[in-house]
Length: 177
Length: 285
Image (cartoon, rainbow over all chains, first blue to last red; front, side, top):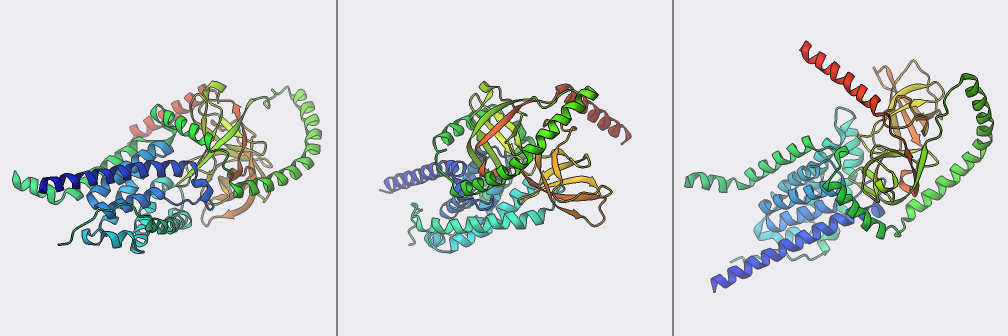
């Protein structure tokens, strides 16, 4: 009986991971093809970061790190960005988001405004790292640029994360016995 | 041994995080956007094909700003045409007197913008002309208004253009009125910034900025924009000049690729000199 339960549990995990991977690819295409429509003064929300934070809060810090690194790396490849920048920024953002992960509070973490707060913190750190490599601070005023674009992008991403709260992606069900 | 495994398991998150950070940093130190090739070119081609399918999706904000830009341009051009005709006659007469070579005969490849990508402050446009049409990496791209950017990747049917409003794009530019050269870059916002112009040179709003004769990337005298405002930085010997680009990057539809690549001998010579200077510096150290 226990073996059957374990097999079922493993299959559930596999399905969830596949869903995350498909969702990541879909969001990458969305970011590359249509994000311009919702861009305000060149500022766009980072949909992939929202997904990374979601995965971290749903699956834990360890799994989140791998997904964040993978998603960031693939996105670097297809977006023409310097390879490694998105991977690093999303990795650190997920690591930070992982501190908010609590196995007993997965649903309340994902389906309440707490999620947007975690996205806000993670997006701020993500943009701080990303803009550091993007700007090469020796050449221009980092803080001026970051306050103008980094903070706006962070807030825009947070705004979009509110939409994610409404979407019920299958999250890990935990028996609290 | 068991203790070691236990320790690793206890700190697995931290160890994984550190390892992935190291990998990312190593990749950053290796990767440069100008080195788009091989696999990435294939990816760009695939995405361009998808982008073409969705290129009919209209962007109302862009259309509105394009209409406005075209009206402004039309007004400006109609008044300039008359001046230009007179100037052309005079120019031809003076050139023949000085026996100078005509430099305005670069071949232009007309292309349509298939998609605009604006991901995390990196702006690119994809055009529907590739290596099959004679487009090569390093070629300049312009519109009737002015300079757009540079080709950074090509596939058989598509090319990726890096627009001027990207942080690491630097253009050698000059002020037409006094022929002073500087370096133009983008530091955020709607303006480009022209630097390295000494404060001893007077710069006024509406001064025209074009590509410099010293540019190893772009053909010279391509219009870029006009001076919007001039700032003097405290303690600096140089002006900080804000340039309003002629091109509206958000509403690009039709562009022209300039079939011109700077003579490789010039680039090689520059590299050679740089290497010599570096070697001398190393010796001094």
